[in-house]
Amino acid sequence: MTSTPLPLGDDRLEEELLTELEDVERRLNEAAAHANPLVQSPARHLMDAGGKRLRPVLVMLTSHFGSGINAQVRTAAVATELTHLATLYHDDVMDDAPLRRGAPSAQHVWGNSVAILTGDLLFARASQMVAELGPVAVRIQAEAFERLVLGQLHETLGPGEGEDAVEHYIRVLSDKTGSLIAAAANYGTLFSGADESSMRASVAYGEKVGVAFQLADDVIDLMSDAETLGKEPGTDLRAGVATMPVLLLGAREAAGEVDEVGASILADLGSEDEEVRASTLGRLRVHPVLEEARTLARQWAADAVAELDVLPDSAAKRALVAFADIVVDRLA
Image 1 (cartoon, rainbow, N blue to C red):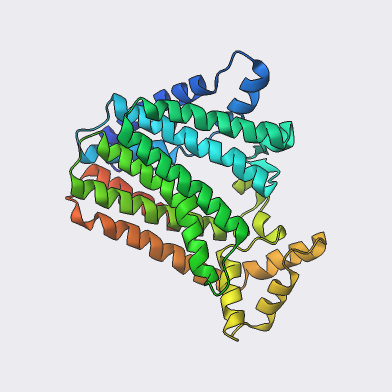
Image 2 (spheres, one colour; image 1 turned 135 degrees about the vertical axis):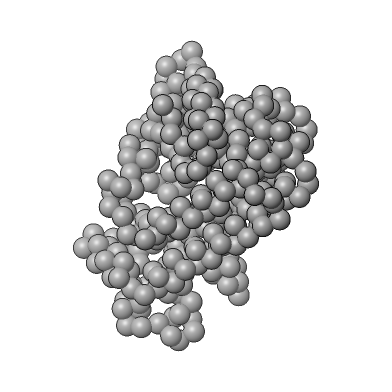
C-alpha cells in the first residue's frame, strides 16, 4: 500500500488519502504506459523508484478546505505529480546526477537525449490532463511551468551584477520548488469550491513550505550518507554549485567576516581532486554556517504555517502544520 508522507493525526483522513494515493499510483502508471517498450521503460523509471507523492497529497488535503476530493481534484493530483516527475528527468540532465531515489538516474541509463525527451513526454501527458480541467487549470499549469523554467534558467545563469546571491537563490527555490507546490494547493482549493481566503492561504503556504523544504534539503544533502539520501551526498558541493550554506559563507566573505576554515571551503569549491572534495564536505559539515542554514529553513517553515492562521481549525489544517514541522524536524 502507498504510504502518506504526512502524520495526519486523523485516522479517517489518513485512510481516505491512503486509498486515494493508490489510485494516483495506478493513474501515474497508466500515463507512463506506451506500446513501445523502449519508451515505456524510461517513462516508468522514476515512478518505479518511488517518491513522497507530496504534491498529490497537498492537492487532496487542501480540497478539504472546500467540499473534499472529487474527480477533478484526483485528475489535478495526478497531473501535478507527472509535472514534478518530468522536472526530475530534466534536473538530472542539468546536474549530471548519477543517482535519483537510490537508482541510477535516467540519463545514466539511456543518455541525455532520452532523459530529456522522456521528461517532455510526461509534461505533455500532464498537460493533456490539465486541459480536461478547463482554462483556469491550464493557466495555473502554464504559470507554474514558466516559473519552473525561469528558476532553472536563473540558477544556471547565477545572480546578476550587484544582485544579492542569497536573495537570488531564494527566488530560484521559490520558482523551482515553491511554484508547483503552490499550484497543487491552488488546484485542491479551486476544484473543491473552497472560498477565496482558503485558496490564498493555501497557495501562500505551499510557496513558502516549498522553499523551506529545499533549504532543509541543502543541509540534509551535506549531512546524510548516500544510502539515506538515495544519491551521492554533497552532489552540488562536489560540482561547485553553491547552495544556501555555501552562499551564506560567501556573504560572510563579502562582509569581511569569514573565518579561516570558511575561506578554505570557498577556495576549494569545484576542485576535481576527490580527496579535496571529501575534505571540503567534511569541513562544511561542522562549520557554524550549517546551523545558520538550518535556522533559515525553520523560519521559512514557520512563515508557511503562519499563512494558515486565517483558517479555522480542521484536520486538514493540522496536517499541513504537521508537514511543515516535519520539514524542519528532518534537520535534527
